[in-house]
Image (cartoon, rainbow, N blue to C red; front, side):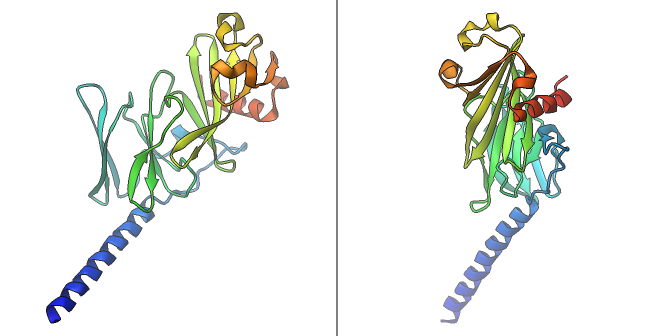
Length: 235
């Protein structure tokens, strides 16, 4: 009987230890409130590249991908293969749940990145699913719980998308195509410089067109703000 009681006590202690470890992991990844500008935005490039007690080790494979290990307080909590084209690491509260997630290879034009979200219950990172490759520049608005991406698809066009993360999936809210030479992209169905659409599907642009203008000042207010924001980051 004493042996059974002893084993039960040991099991309870071990369970409590796991629970404490889980709580400690969450506390380590507790996100600080980001510093935004006057319009409520900040750049992904403003996010920290390191955290106390967290180590992200990247090693490039022969095929160009990266083998990634994540250690918290010296313990390996995750390992995965990342197809990012760069191995720069940023800690960002991507889904605004109060905990840091890992963004590997903060994208610039023509570079591709991946986002790994922290699961507070399962205590691991899992890959977020994007409707497109995560490439371009990114700004975030915590008050609206939104991201905005900006990328160049050709020499005369920029493509912006407002989106959010719903569980592990990217949900596109609205997009803006900025084409300095509309005649070069007849497939977009664009005859004027700025076209605001719902979602991000070029093929349905003519069906989902919301706004169509040659003047930036004629765009909805939020898009004027967003374009001005990106002017700070895209040179």
